Amino acid sequence: MDWYSIVKFLHIVSATVWVGGGFTLMLLAFLADRAGDLAATLQAMRATGELGGKLFAPLSILTLAFGLVMCWFWVGFSDLWIIIGLAGYLTTFCVGMFIFKPTAEKMAAMIDRDGVTPGALAHGQRIIAAACFDYSVMLVIVADMVLKPTVRDIAILVGMLAILAIGLTLSLGGARRLTPRVA
Image (cartoon, rainbow, N blue to C red; front, top):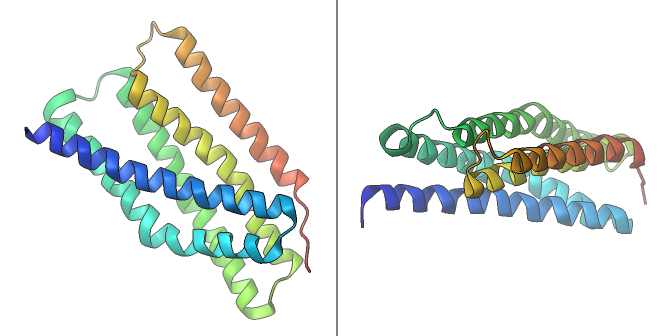
């Protein structure tokens, strides 16, 4: 076995746990919210907030680090699929740091201070709505890593843009559609 295979394996494992774990929690929160199950919605939102900084952020950094090592030593940085992957990572990192983290912290503080209120739930539902876009970006990154498109792969690139547009539409529509419910 060579070093490239080891680094690639670590890159894929860290990405799988990061993306898969986050997607599972987002899906649980979304389904619980749709079902009107306040306790399950709050549990999924709290778990997302707790695991965001302790598990998902470190795994995202490891995913990036292993990817950068592969680029630096073996692949290079000039291929379109590498640029798309790095732009996608930057996007999802910013969503995590500037939307998920502060919103989850505000929600947790509101719940600790006042209990479950419509305002606290509104923060949690903003997280669910933003996750629609975030996971559309992650889907594009995964497709990008597998398909490795070039500028000549117009259909793949248009498909990626369509996925982002759908994710953004669901995110913006979800933010307006979701209404806080307190039991």
